[in-house]
Image (cartoon, rainbow, N blue to C red; front, side, top):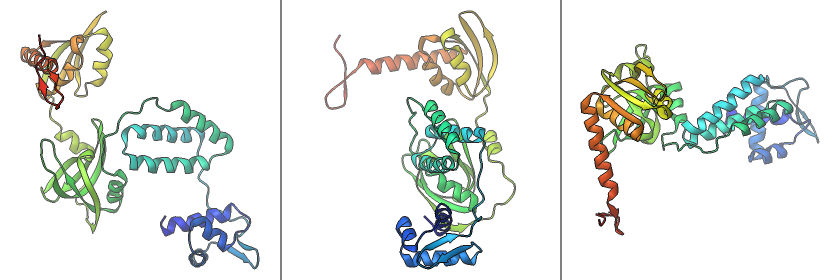
Length: 324
């Protein structure tokens, strides 16, 4: 706890009690009595009306309190929902900050609304939590964004066997394609780059700051640099997977033709490799109609996967062919 948080905590502590001794406050905050005296003096110097009564203790002048933060029911429910979503999309360090903040928010609610919020939170809890990939501490990135400080980290890019040290000027933090991405000016590359936070290690904020130059829109940067979906693929999906296909394909649907037992979709894609991997997950429930090259790619990948899984693992962890 830094000093500003501690001073605010002292005010809240005194606000919740009629009187408190310096020894009581020192014990509560795990500080020395001398530190408590210094903090009380500092609060008095900035105008907080703290009264001292010999033999009794300290108190706040009647009527003084920190301005309360009031939430409507809808606002409290929205914050709880946001916290539950973060359980699926944030790293453990960031989730802990959110959980602490939510506890403070709920503590400020009236008892009846707090109980109602707890019931809603329990009823919305996920049965199975999706695994969140290990990633950099988002709170550090946010702090660097807010103070215009340089970040340094080890980064292992796609297809790289070793990590490289990067020093960057952070300009935006975006969530897309199931990952958090830092958009920053990379000093070693001399240009803006998109860094996946799950590929960062050893993240630290450097003392040096920077002055942002021209106006920069991180979302526009990502849109401009994503691969252009110039190719078209036509595929038929069985009725039981059609809705999934329409929801999952993020590059865009050009055309739909829905029938009673199936549907044809025309998909945009930047390359056939990307859509081939996705289509394989549908098994026999998806049929490529065009282009023929994509049908061949799927057949080759399916045959390679079948051959791979027909081999039996040996005890040493290798593979050996199964007997006929």
